[in-house]
Length: 56
Image (tube, rainbow, N blue to C red; front, side, top):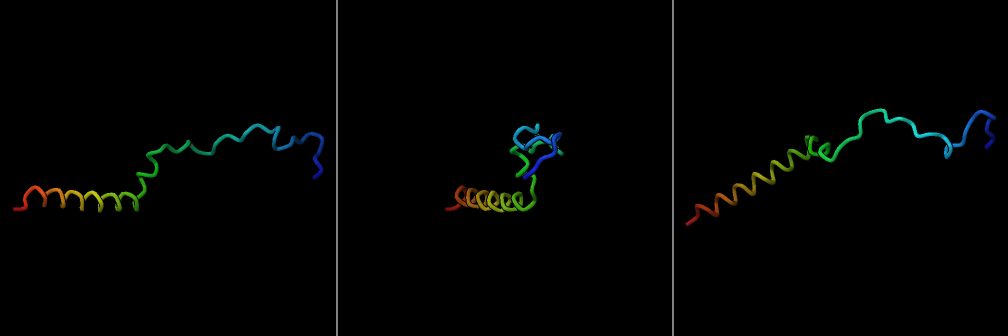
């Protein structure tokens, strides 16, 4: 691959600035499908805990 005299190789080129802020680890928790899944799981756990507390 031929390069023009003013062009630098990708290795020598400085990294491009990020187009948006980096996403933190809490980004995944803000997704609706994950929140629905966790809500169902925690609801089931809560129901079983209450059932264990009040069963005869």
